[in-house]
Amino acid sequence: MKYRKKPVVIEAFQWIDKPSFPEGFEELHEKAKITKDEKLAIETLEGSITASNGDFIIKGINGEFYPCKPDIFEKTYEKVEE
Image: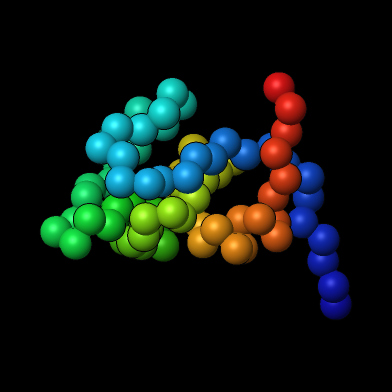
C-alpha cells in the first residue's frame, strides 16, 4: 500500500549554534539541552534525539519537538508565505 502525507503546516527553525530559540519555541528550553560537543539533545516522544548544527527543529502538530536533517527537510517541506 502507498500513503501520502497530509498537508499540515508546521513550525520549524534551523538550529545553528543558537543558545536561544525563536518565538513559538520557548518551551523547547524545558525539553532540550546543549551537549558538551555543542549538539542539541531534545526529549522527544521516542526518547532523547540529538540535533547537529544545521538541523531543522520541528514543532509537531501536538506541540512535540524533533530534529530533521536539512536534506530530508528540503525534500519534505516547502516554505509557506504568511
